[in-house]
Image 1 (tube, one colour):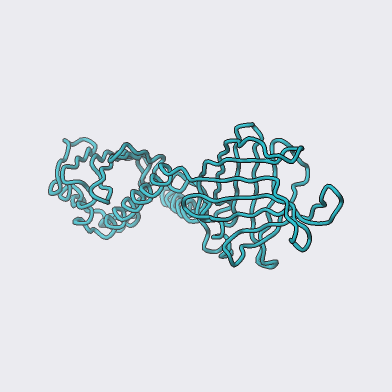
Image 2 (tube, rainbow, N blue to C red):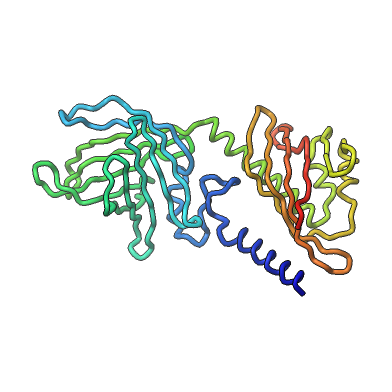
Length: 320
């Protein structure tokens, strides 16, 4: 009875761990994912999710523009994919960040801003929406130096997978007068962007392998490896080649009910990549007994045309 209780606790913990916070930033998705239950406007910032290298230019007291400052701007989904957070890391040490939430009842974004250069006990708030031109425009009431009422307006434009532009400017109430005071141009790190795309391919290949394992599709499992792949199972010789690999996975009498690989890191070296982490699942014996299992693994991947296939695969179980 005690053993059954422990298994039940483990199963509940496993389900909660995988499903309850699956949109949070993780090893697989370092910048998180949008939650399908969130307002659809959470996708407004999707082109910005990730990291860009930027040039930040501010207007000086004499009204001229200062020299550009290098800056990194990162965006990610937080609160299990229900909101967006960003941070800027500037070469001059004046870092900043924001929490961005879309409130359906008011049909607008609310952005809470904070910075290292001017800490505040009450965070300033900008409000706004994405307009028909595809720009995200946010406002906060602010008087001009001469006392005229107006807004400080923040605008994101030209948003794409390549980068975006941002401008902060004072505008009059009717927006006929504008005075920019801060401009930022951002370009996405192309190597990082490419690696992100390739990483998604590897994660998808891992997912398809697990799905094939559950349905006993051994042909698909074998095809997930290169023709010269090697397996390194515990207490056996190295297994080489497609036919031998398929035969190895066909061994055993237990049915796999659940299987998932959870990488800690995925790193690239040209046409090779490696990832390591943990795998876990649930198996069912011939007598119907269900047993959770967990282990650790290392996989070396090789790019074959446009696909990633496993070249070296080593794993071992952890004690239950």
